[in-house]
Image (cartoon, rainbow, N blue to C red; front, side):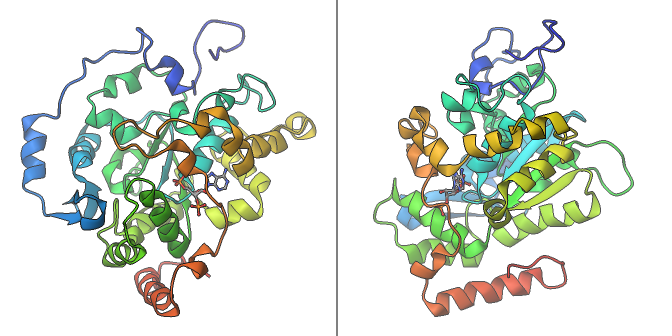
Length: 349
Ligand code: A3P
């Protein structure tokens, strides 16, 4: 357990899995979503993804959320109270979430858990077990556990920024917390998503995933609005939102880890640089390193959906879309993206 200055005061982030069932942590009795939220969801437009056993999505404030998470979005908007020291890792699925979750945990927790230590939490836990999944906590009525976590809290989410309004206050207002977003080239993200979904829905056609991505009816989509919400906030409030790109992380992971550390107010000291701490974090969180951990070879991302953890670690490259999309498909998606991003200052080269 992390402590500060030899005292027994707990400092975060603590590996969430280690405290999840800690008696001290449970301050709320799990509850089902209230009738109010159930009623809210039943009034929303819905659609289904045929190739995924008719998975149902509901459109909440312009975003297509998995049905079960729409009440969480409403609850988050109303009740989530960020602390100034909070760090939220945000992404779309297959945008590089797991990598950023691991890097953020290793960076923020490095004083209690040096990256080279044999008992580092990332050597025994899947990266997602180290952080609470924000919407998961709110849908399960476990948000009281968030209140009990020591600061700084490190959490992750796939929610659009609009669902966590307290994180980045409106123009001119102070407060909020820090959000680190990872964005990936959309064609590669869609290819990655299809490979992932196929692990549970082997008959799912690539064209179906491609079409829902282009239509905007992809989980947590439209992807362009998801990305733009965070992008615009990063431009307007760079002290609150750091916008990282998966391709840049691949190109220069160490420099991006330094950016992350500076952003969260924990820059690497000269002594840490000399001791190779940055290199240690990059190595610990590399695709090969994480893939090789026992905790990532077996088990499920969550026991309900049954996606195997090892499916989180596939190729980790750029331009994989070239082996899956026809030139017409690539052109269609590029045109959509260019149209949606025009004038925003964001582009995918
Ligand atoms: P590919 O399917 O293209 O290989 P997410 O974590 O958001 O679900 O994203 C998964 C994608 O990130 C997968 O992409 C996976 O291989 C890649 N990935 C996971 N861990 C990584 C790491 N440590 N370094 C680079 N890429 C990683």
